[in-house]
Amino acid sequence: MSLLVILLVSAGSTPARAAPDDETPKQKADRTPAETPKKEDKVEEPEKKPSGPVDADKLKQQLLATAAAGKLTDDLIDLFKTYALARAKQKLAKDVPADFWTWVEAKPTIREGLLVALHPEYSPHVVKSLEALREKFGEKVDTHPHLALAFAVVFGRAGDASPWAAALGYLRKDRKAPTMEQSFRYYLKYEKSMKFSLTQTPWPLLAYVADNETPLPERLWVLNTFRRAGKGVYYKVPYDWDLLKGNPDIGNRPRTLANIRKYGGVCVDRAYFASRVYKSLGVPSMSVSGAGRRGGHAWVAWVIPGEKSYELYDEGRFDMDRYYTGTTWDPLSRKNVLDRDVQLLSAALSTSYKRYLNACIGCHVYEMLEGDKRKGKTGLLKDSVEMNPFVARPWRLLADACVEGIATKEEGEKLFDSIFKALAPYPDLTFEVLAKVLSPRLQVEGEPDKEEIDSNSRVLNRAFQLYEKAKRPDLAVKLCLLQGSYFEAVDRKMSALKLYATASEKYAREHYGFREVFDRVLVMLSGQKNLKRRLAFCEVMIKEVPKQRSAFDKKLNQLNPSYVYVVRAYIRALYAAGKDSLAERWEKKIEPKDR
Image (cartoon, rainbow, N blue to C red; front, side, top):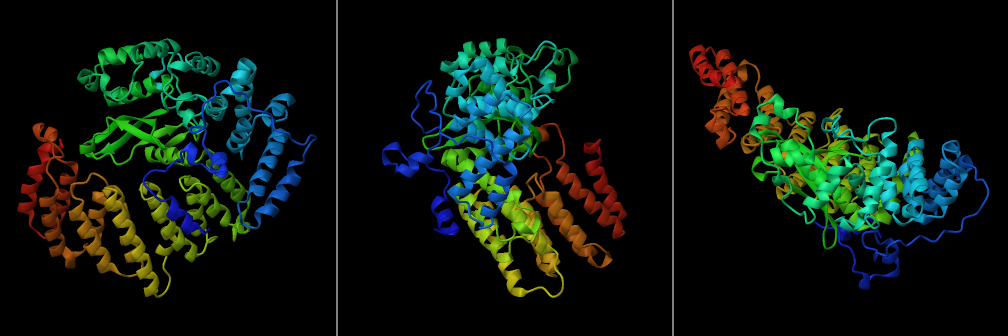
């Protein structure tokens, strides 16, 4: 079956999971841990593996020779697992006892998740963390492999740094985070009070539970106070206006969860509080922050098990302020990511955990190929997409291949078509891929080809329709800037000017990207010969951009920064036209609000 056909079949707003009674034997094999009927304390049967040392370098040569076919086959996947295990044993021989690897080989869930997580760094901290849990908790690690993996990867990837990078402001002398072992024991001891399965939830999601730095006494307070916690936890914290004003006495108060709930806090405290309540109840959750119509804000997001999928839900993300995206700390990559990335991860794990791992393996193998050896091997990435279209990494690598000239323009065109169909509900990744693939085409040399220009324009227009349907004007503005740059590169400057001017009016009330579009028009209308047109454009935009961003700003008599920005551009144009008195009158209109 072709890539396009498979993506058409898998496209949709929600990744469906088959009901157990309707499953084929293959679907049963691919079923995610979240779908598997729960059997408490079931220890995995060991798999029989050939004994004796295996040369990792020879396996690597065999792996790359097999990968030369550019197909992600079952044999290639198995060969990677064999290689990765041999490489791990070789590189980490001094870090853990030999019986650790014997144990790993006998536990399929542990082995496969660990090998995917270790490659390519093979961090000794990760295996040491897992071995520490095994020594301390024995068979409980066997019965809770995903929870153990989540803790080992979160703590191991932190290495010598703090695993609590996202919450250091809340950890003071009066609030000490528990050790990895203490936190793991807490989840085992109070497993029946957890809202998520600690045995069936995939470890990439449980990572957002394992990164819980909340002190143990506060977690017990959560269990006693929020046993039936659902929605509304964010709003349990009253808003503290004195803290917003910077009252130092309030700021020095111990930032325990109980105190935050009792005395209140600002949006950041609300998001922190709610996310830690959920984490302490075993719910994958995170504090998210972003910029909206009225400036910066923070809210909480958490994963809920839907009827057919894992879904990301949020609270405190006020729609009226248009927080299109937010950033959160990813405990696995140890960097800030979009909340939309976590949403996509949830969809990937809903589709199939096994296929999620296989798609990751396809990417690992592709990246092991170097330079020109990757040419003709992008089939590994296309097969990874077929394995699980909601895994972001193969899409990103395919886009990089187009930028680097490893993939052809024709492959880039097919990539557009595929991603628009498969990931329509997840438009952020579609724009990221689109921008990468189009970037080389902005470097036009010689006479531009009309057919290619028209083809690229059709792709861009199709993306506009997608972002309009998804109600994502922020992406539409980004796309406008990209398309305008393309028109300028192929010497269609009037088309670019029209596009920028139209977008300036259309998105005048948006906080995101408006000024960039507006500035593009000013640049194209620079110089004395365009002065009249520049004045006319500014006069139109002054009427379009609201003076205040909200009723709150109006009450405080605060001007919209974008309005001030446009007025200043108009003032500069007035001075250039010799209309000094009118320019001075406009300066007085904005001057008091700017101080």
